[in-house]
Length: 411
Image (tube, helix red, strand yellow):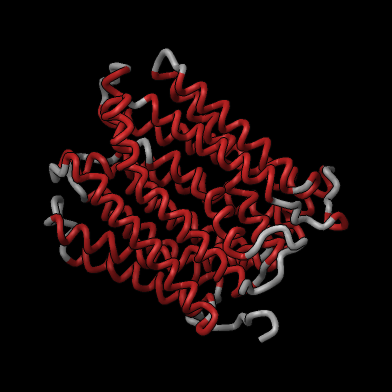
């Protein structure tokens, strides 16, 4: 049984989680499905610099970050569903543009347009969840959603490689177009409007400024948003350089999608664990313990001197531990950031999504561009960003960690 009843009874809990999971999976799928095909795309367009292939990820992330500040305020004014449909249509248009791109620059522009459209499901998915849930219930729902949305990207590199082998890499974009069509049909036919009419916010400078001021001056919201940005930076640095690390350094070749998927599955496992733990222990206790574990794993690699080429099992263990901690921390950080600002959920989700995406893309790009044929830039980047996240949470909580202050509604 769902923790609370649907707003208008339009979706049962399982279908609601699946649809929100798909909405959040499309942005991640659009990144991960490209990874195995990056060398082929670079070869097709005669891209000389190996690190420039990462721009296919970076361009998408740039559009993704730029789009997020707009969708939330518009969704607070006009409702969730119209903006969600508009974003999916923009995503589909960018996908068609990538399919027909005559050159590498055009591919990058189309990827940016894809990201601009994909920002809508990212922002509005979180907004819809906040419309229906709060507190630990929201963290529990977000854990299930993250588990669903991780399962698809786990398979994405293998899907991308299979499509490339059968029909060539351009048909990867055909697969993304089908995914957008599925989401559009599901949203159009099954999703009701979750925003109450009385919560519509005027689209004026004063109203937008007031809502944004509320978001950035709420200690819990801004603190956990900044901390999430650091953690997403480490994830994006891994995604940007994973193909080069596992293929160029460790020579995994066709086994790269298997390794990538196995590590991504750890996040899904952590999300399932979080859904079971958060109701009993609380968001703070679970996420703070996970963040401490994340930093401890980085400290262990630091003590070893950040080896330039760790044995593959050691690197896999390090990544598995940090990914597991990531999966326990981020859903709770997101729920705690959204908790105090439910009355302006769209604007808050836009700000949180924009900041975490922009910070993640910037940190990930910086660490990815530092790739020098070793894993040292990645592990050092993880250590720095993990430490900054811990310092941010300490400042947000005034030095007190592992508290279980929040309560489930009705508890």
